[in-house]
Amino acid sequence: MKRTLIAASALAALVAFGATEASAGNGAVIQQFGRANSTSALQTGHKNRIVMQQNGRGQFVKAVQYGLRNYMHATQQGNRNAILTDQYGVNNYAAIGQDGKFLSASAVQTGANNVVGIAQIGKGHTASAEQSGSNNALGIIQIGKNQNVQTYQGGNGNVSLVIQAGF
Amino acid sequence: MFTALFVLLGMSTAYSAPLPPASPDAVVHCAIDAERMGQSVTLSPRIASDDGVMGVYTLAVTKSGPDGSAVLSQGGAFDTAAEDAGDVGEMTLTLEPGAALEATLRVEWNGGETFCVLGA
Image (cartoon, rainbow over all chains, first blue to last red; front, side, top):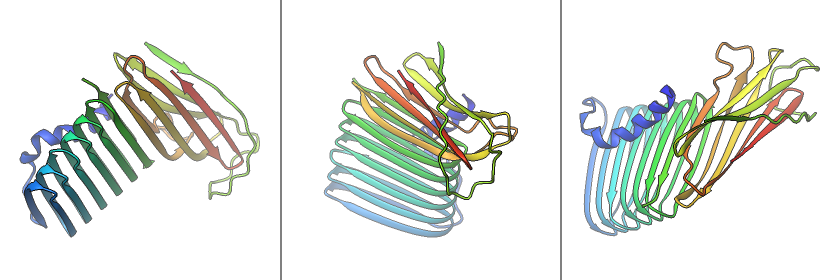
């Protein structure tokens, strides 16, 4: 049960991400509003931090981080949005939140101490997470109908939590 | 409610991965523990042997139901002689009324392979 709570903490971060520690490394904050926006971000180094927010329809996010202590937070509100994240390094942390219809989220983590949290609200969503390394924890919650999840964890200390609830 | 389905099928399959040698007579048991709580179920792979055996495991789970479908996979190394040998992974997922779940645990070591199946 304790280990399941670790995965659940990844989801909790979607609510409380503003309380994370200040980063002395790379930081990026991207906000987009409107229709058919896309954004991409690449960070390498130490203490990488990306915060992305999109509001609208047909949005796309791609973010890649290499290094130590990677932190990523991405949120989208609207329909037919997609988020892709890749993290390579140690202490990878990704939190993804989406609200709308026909949403897609994909998170890949390679390294050690991997944590992914994905929350999707609406219908027709797809969430996928792939973790390779050690101490892998992922939590995915989907609220709505016609949801789909795919996960893969390879390594030591694998914990996954998937919640699907229709309404 | 606590259920565990234990299916053991011994197979002698050559395995080419760089795993340490195991006793030719080594017997490895596997099981999938399923702990049901409300509309969720927690699956835990269990691997045991009277001999110290190292190898790799894969737990594959498919769930389909009115609220959605899920395909989950976990894999990694195990060592039955390790202190935490019985704690190789864990999956928790919702299992709403009308949902079906199938889990397969495949265990491979140098000189053998076995698997367990859980259906609910």
